[in-house]
Every structure is written in structure tokens, then in C-alpha cells.
Length: 404
Image (tube, rainbow, N blue to C red; front, side):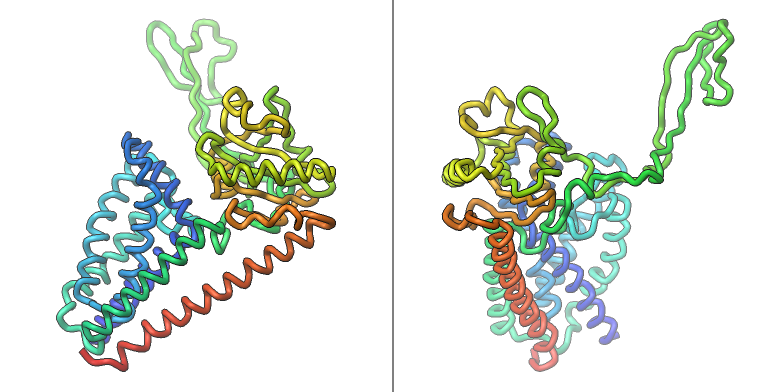
């Protein structure tokens, strides 16, 4: 029984750590998902709390998981995990039944689950969570109160720094379709032999006051005694969906510029400001100054926004402005504004306004600048991985060294 208890504790801890970690990689993405929930349940008054709640949710899951893995304050940790599952399991059932938001976002963009898959996942996770709660008094080989408190505080501090870095410098790992190295035109392409969507199409006709449904094979096309009433289509199976299927850039006059950007030979810099009126003012000024320098050098520079052309006009004067769907822009880059360097149609680099290189670095071959930026991002990721590995090592080994 003791072995089962330890296994349940470790399994539960791993699930909570993973869930909190992948959300912490992209806290803005979690905030956007919370915003979708608020809109679906008509709770828009909570929109300003989306990011703080996202940070709290990421932190709660990660720290609860680390407490369970390490045995730090295991009794309150078991209650924390149980309360979390008691709140979210019924919520995921509601989402599965009503489907107001297609993806729950429980594992961020790392693993996409349907609402029914999420509910089933929660039912499965609830089993070891309940077991750990019931056996919380039988935990052996866990940390002392003082050691457990110090370890928990350290986890909170380190993970908050991690979240802050991902908000300021963009997610350490990009799970989205527009990650660096993606050729946008290729990701949008549909193979000629791709499977199309399949629909069940029904025709409704009326005769002598009685309505009847027909299929494509038996509808009364030549029988004038039947009067057409309506047609309905039900999706049976989804066909091939390209990795990128919602990327469209248009001018204020409605001219599609997508191909001109994605198939341009050379470098293009996009300043993405999903809502210009909400964008960081210092970030916009950085973008304007850089844009003017690039235009002098003959480098294509576009401001891309979801703000309407009429409202955007005062803020894009003197620059090429393109317009796109707000959800698409949120997916491309989390920062507002953010900067995307595209070379020969391939995403070469992405920056938030916090870590945008100085103007004098945008000289010569911009691919070299992109390479240096990605090298720096790789070094940050390696440092994060090392810190996380140390935390996990401590969490998994200390319980077997310390006594209650």
C-alpha cells in the first residue's frame, strides 16, 4: 500500500507539474483562453483579470505538483490537488456538453485536446488524486515542515521568474504554427490529393402541407408538385486542414497582400499590433523608429493590425498597413506589439518589444541577426532546462533522504 501511495503521489505530481509548466511557457496564451471562456459565459467584466488569473493558475498547478513530487507540505498539497480537480472536472463536463470553446487549453498549445478528451483525462487523473488525499496521513519519507516550506518558496520564486520571462521575451518554446523556421506558404498549401470535408446534405421539400427530407440521390428534382423549402449540411468528417489556414493580409482597400508577403524574395519585417489602441506605447515608438530606418534601407516593413482602418489611420501614417484577424495575430505572436522577421517566406525571428534589437543591428544580412537572436533564445532555453532539471532532481530525491 505504501508503494501505491508513493506511485500515486509521483504520478499526480508529474501531471500537475507538466500542466503548470506548459501553461507557464505561454501565460498570454492561457490568458487568451480564459478570455474565450469569459466571452462564452458572458463574463466579459473579468477580461482585465485574465492575465493575473492565468499566472495564478500556472503557478498553482506547477507548485502543487512540485510539492507532491517532493513531499513538501504533502498534506496541504493533497488538498490543493483535490480541490483543483473538484472544481475543474465538473467544469470540463459542462464544456464537453455545451462546447462553447473547442479546446480547453489545459496543456496550453503543447497538447490539444477536445473537451470530451479533457473530461476523460480529468476523470483518470482524479483517481490517483483521491487516493493521495485519502492516504495523506500515511506518507513516509517526505520533507520536514521547514525544509518543505523553503523548497516551496523557492519553487514559487523560480517559476514566477520563468513566467515573467515568457511574458516579456515571448514563450521559451513556441508550440504554435508560426514558430521560427516555418515557411508560411508551404504550411498553407493543400496537397492536390488531400481528403476534402465530408458532409451529409439533406434537402427539405414540401407537398400538400407535409415536409420531407431527401438526400442527393432521391430528391424530387423533376417533380414540380414538391416545393423546395430548405437545405441543411452536417459535417460528417473533417478533411485535410493545413498547418496554417487562417493567414490573410489585406490592405485598407481590401487588396489581398498575403502572397506578396509570404512569397517575397528577401526580408520582410512585420510589426504585429493586434489592437493598436491597446499596444504598449514605448513598443510602438520602437517599431516606428525601426520602421523608418528599414524603409530608408529599402527593407519591406508593414504594420499588421486587427484595428479597423479608420481607427488605425492616425497610428500608421507613413507606413504600409495591413489588416488581419485578431485571433490570427494573437496566434502569430503574443506580444503587443511584436515583431516577425520573414525571409523568403520563412519565419526567421520573432521579438517582443522588450527584446527587439537596436536599430543599428538591422544592417546587412538580416538572417545573421536572426541567427544570433535564435542562438540567444537557445541559450536561455538551455538555462531554463538546467534549472528545471535541478528542481526535478531535488524534488524526486530529497524525499528518500529526509525524514518527517
